[in-house]
Image (cartoon, rainbow, N blue to C red):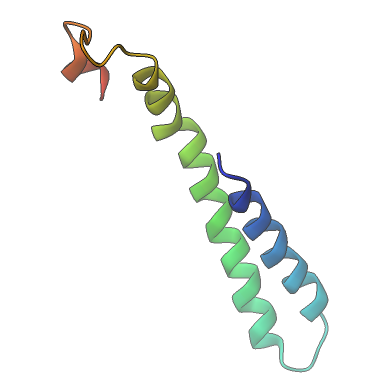
Length: 73
């Protein structure tokens, strides 16, 4: 997982923390929503495409496995 995924989550959470309690709380809610939406996308990346990508990266390009189509799903 690229480091900027975690950096983006940390930054949006930090912005929400800094905006908490200020009079214009719409910005707080939006930054909190950004953090709340970013976390599931990180978790999906870790459990969805990342394991498949790791497995495919180990293949020999000149001799892929016989069931290579089924392994991508």
